[in-house]
Amino acid sequence: HVTGVQTCALAIYNDSGSDFTIYQDATQRLKIDSSGNVGIGTSSPSSLLTLQNGVITQRISTAPTSSGTVIGSIKFQSDNSYSSYIDACSIQAISLSNWGSSRESGLTFSTLSNSVFAERVLIDNNGNVGIGTSSPASLLDVSGSGNITATIRSTSTSGARDAKLRLNIASTG
Image (cartoon, rainbow, N blue to C red; front, top):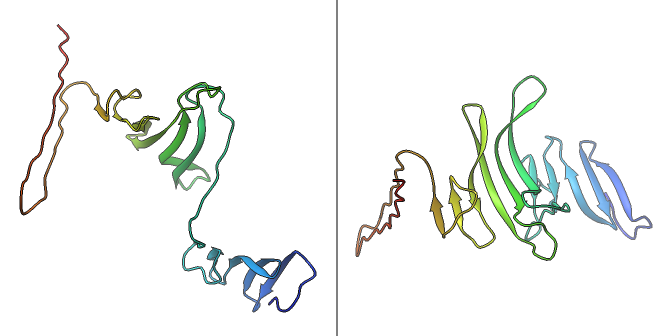
């Protein structure tokens, strides 16, 4: 344990013979407890990774050079038992411009279906949401071939129960 005035800026300890702890200037920064839980900003991690200290900000950075460049991503993967991982879902920040003087970005959400990994939803730099389109033209833009079914449901049990839907069906002939 670190007590009193310290002369080093960084100290690594094996506390109590079972916990691994990193201190900086007498302040605990990281702890791995005897069960393997990792804590950053806490001395008692309660799960595999516990982050605690007000607002948690993770920084993922890159220098996008063109439209469509992935700036950062969070991938949810599954172990296929053959020492490799399969992407199950992902959230990606992408550039929507050439990133010169005009910097525009968006978020994509992708899922895996029948072994095909594909983008399902895009939120663009204007806040427009596209489902089935990578260029949403309105606040919610749903695009697809064949029959498209949409459900709007009000769960209110009292008062007005209004649900409104505007259809814009393009004619191809």
